Image (cartoon, rainbow, N blue to C red; front, side, top):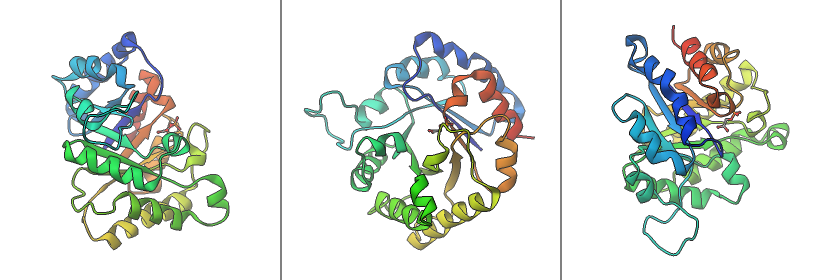
Length: 245
Ligand code: PGA
């Protein structure tokens, strides 16, 4: 199981201490085989990596520039720079970034550049509320996945995070039937691409200690991408504990 903390634009050096209790937890036998990944802002990647490098916790970035080479891209960070911090993962295609102009083509380029640097990619897909209302969820997921993974042959280092946009930060989660249907759609789309038998699929969107167990009972998923609740170490720990019996 994967438990990924997406801190978004939150956190300073002192907040890295929040991982102390998670560090302890990650050493317990029961949790040893599960993956805990912190994705703080770029500014904390290196310090966070230094803090957890001797543990089983990994570090990831929240985005990267599509260009693998260094160049005149003021304010941007590419996968080489991310790699140099010690981070092993990168979130790509998050709806926050799609809202700020990321499209399927440049998400595809970002994924390729991250894979080139041997980063593992947490590739976010999901429908908006108006798309869900118009019954467009399947076609949106198909478009995002097919275009996002275009000309990528090896899915070994790709994890898909299904994040319905209407669920992010709202406290709303899909109904059981809906979640099942959409996760199955993702599996079907991936099998159409015939590139991987087994690809990990996570759910993200308002995951909390109160709904983690229910979500896992609804559908066969490989873990969670957690936003808001991951900023609170106790809540993040509770999500992990409730998910693993
Ligand atoms: P949330 O965010 O858990 O606060 O809904 C999830 C995400 O955006 O990855």
